[in-house]
Length: 284
Ligand SMILES: NC(=O)c1ccc[n+]([C@@H]2O[C@H](COP(=O)([O-])OP(=O)(O)OC[C@H]3O[C@@H](n4cnc5c(N)ncnc54)[C@H](OP(=O)(O)O)[C@@H]3O)[C@@H](O)[C@H]2O)c1
Image (cartoon, rainbow, N blue to C red; front, side):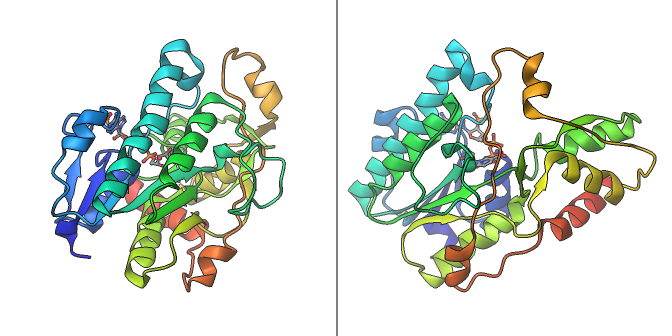
């Protein structure tokens, strides 16, 4: 596909920004230009020159989704919005590439596969699961299940670098495990699936590398940022959230099985390598 046949939805988010850098000639829209919750606006949009929708838009405030206002908005964007895009994809015979999350699972299975039954714990995960079901109705769909995305925007690595800057040694949960996923890696997956015309369907799409806890990842962030003086104290999710009523439950195991993606010929990068490069750039 040519860039001009691609539309990037949610182009100013972490992933949207990276996709736009990869496909500079694509149409890039934010919620001001195309609000995906507005079914009439999505239906009336001029899709005539498009072949591919890259949907990077979402309501991503996991704890916000547990509030009354947040719950409604999360459902609107993550479920109704995806439904509207799926309807356009069906009507205009477009490829719909949608991004989903480990939060559609309860995290009790080791290494989630694409065929695991949906079992979301919190509202955000429930809305993402509904979005997956909508997206899957478009005959030409790719649903990428990702985890712990790091790019241009507010994210865990930046939060920890900011603590390091201020000389703060944090307490971090040590019983939630997974892998960081850099936006550059997700863009490589998108490019690979579209470029090789891989079979449509659901694909887990995270960086490869060791499955670590947030505490272990924080130690690696501090090492890469050259802050050996800082310590990371382990805590449990239950303890950490005990003082924060109303926060969303989170899956403890976010490891995604990458075998299906690898069977298409894709070679994943290790998140530790991408972390080092990301931190070097942040500190430059
Ligand atoms: N972040 C993670 O750790 C993580 C992990 C797994 C999966 N995911 C999934 O990966 C995808 C990308 O995440 P991200 O971290 O890049 O998200 P992000 O930085 O929060 O960006 C989301 C974008 O969606 C846009 N958006 C919100 N409501 C919209 C609406 N009604 N219409 C159009 N656009 C709207 C926002 O634009 P405005 O500012 O204009 O509203 C924002 O730019 C999402 O599907 C997310 O669920 C994320």
